[in-house]
Image 1 (tube, rainbow, N blue to C red):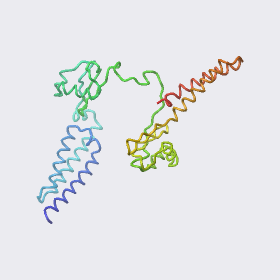
Image 2: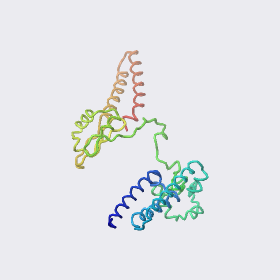
Image 3: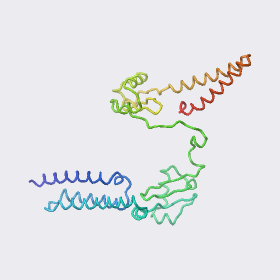
Image 4: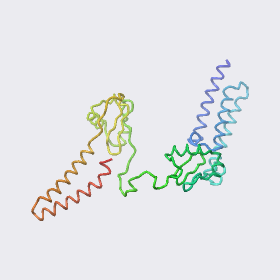
Length: 286
């Protein structure tokens, strides 16, 4: 067999072996690496190169070595799942870098992190002043997570005591001009409904690069031609305006009528409508 062909076959074999072994190790191997996983990744890559290029007759021993490394990784991951002490020993513990707005210099030195690097990581978390940070910790993965002081945290509906409707993930129903039937079925809509919504926007499926439906049944599209402006759905805004008009009409009727019973009825209906609007506002004014 020619040398070049043998190398091609070995390389293809190495690709298949690496793919299978990576699937066995799981997604963590390609996302957050511990010290041992980092070493494992480098070693397995070196062994794969050996299998591909070493023309020795014993090249298959590289497969044995890869199998041993993967087996060791699986055993260590199993021990980490079963024992916190093993997790702490292998992955390490998080290190607190900032507490109550004060930088812990000793911990900074322990992690060999300069002040400039710390400030860079804080800016990535939208924290530009150390005094604004209540707590910052360097995780075992090397990421730095930040908790801003309460007065500097973004305002949310829960801070105002406002209840909002639950939000579900949007479904992508059009990709590259093709309708995704499975996504439509997930939200309980048909192709006919989708076509009707596209007709309202005066666009065709073929011109849609991406189409998504939110949890409230509104279709949003991104067209291939960015110069074309697509109007945003107005159904919820129109509904909210109509309900507000009904509330205003009831209040007006209550103020203008001279019938005492009718006045009480209109005022009661107006209060009920006000409660309904308060419940629907988070949904209709989003």
